[in-house]
Image (cartoon, rainbow, N blue to C red; front, top):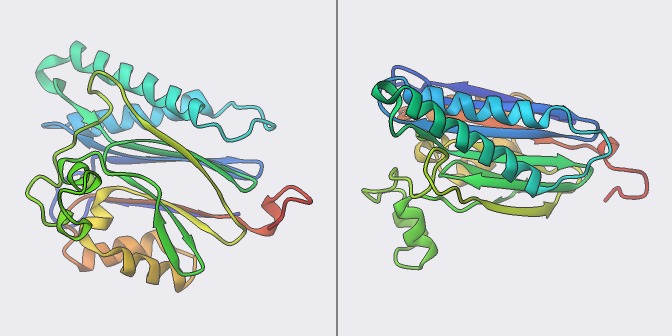
Length: 248
Ligand code: MG
């Protein structure tokens, strides 16, 4: 198993309101990225609460546990409650703060995920690059309804307006699972990456090799102007990560 992860403020924003976590497991990992929203330092606070809660609730799972999106959803729901409580406690600085969170549990060829907001989860397989999440943004919802074509979402004036986030009540989240093969790359990113460079460019960069891919993608986003904070967490499983008899 190989990992690559990095986070960068970009070239326009003065601070980094993204956070991420990566918890190694016996044959995989738990991963999450979060992109905070809110005035002043509130976005940073919200994304940090989200990744800290995720780490706290999921770092002690027994080795024999298998990927289960319900466990991820519970962690996101707990983070949602803590963000709402923190915002109430310090209403002057933190009212209305929130964060996206895209989380995944990868283990022995199984991937489970839970997701709120417009960060994304992708799987790269032999040159094909597939997004497993829907953006919970105004533009993303219009694409999902078929009102606008996907290529128009990137320039839509409300592409950054979230329709769901942790810190918003009521809590709702998307869940799913997928099969992962040896050599696949599972990649989580905040919207800073996909607003700077295209999916085709991301796929091409992954195709160049896995080593250092997170930093290479962030460099590419910054060469394209670095309009937002960018976070990338990527994992590639090898044949040794599959239980005997289960190797693809
Ligand atoms: Mg962002």
